[in-house]
Length: 248
Image (cartoon, rainbow, N blue to C red; front, side):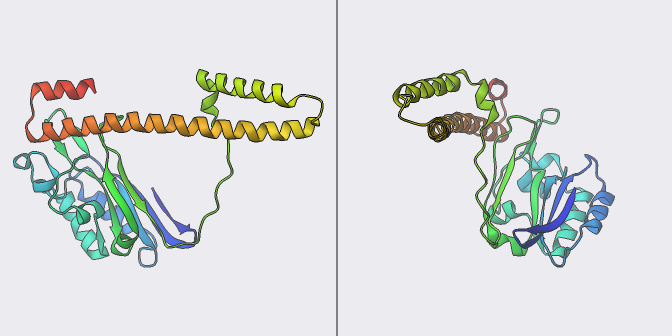
């Protein structure tokens, strides 16, 4: 997928890649040849390249692999375009992995970003998370483009909250308390309704913020546990660690 346009006035070309899982240099050649506006736009490309750039640092067992023709072709084009892998640029020599193959019992880093060097100063953070939902690790990159300030989006109710029993009980209680205090004949129906909406919005925002915070803490605890086991297993694989990983 390739999209060329402007984000708040900044010219950007976004490219999402899912490369074949065989050594196909023609895929790299065709993909690079079709990227539009490469001379005038910021390049941000990312995805599953299905190749290891450097077997020494991007595989948990370097002895089981060699640099593929597709990886060499990608490096060639990156050099020609003045592009880099921002995670590797920030972490030279370090090991982090994005995919685990149970068949080969090896971790690899085959998911990454490729950006033009002009984008590097605008990157705030680039990191990998744990392999949890799929067999690949999420790869995050925060980019702060030098653009105008975007407007804050309008608040909307998260419909998923309606299936939350605790949320429904809290809102019902808030409505009951508000009604008991304000439905006394001294407040007009329109004022009563408008004020109630403001009160409920505050309750909803407070509840969702608390729930999101609790979910974030629980999710991060799980991610940290998985990362710890993955790192141990990549350095010294054991049956016990594999069993612990499956339980997580």
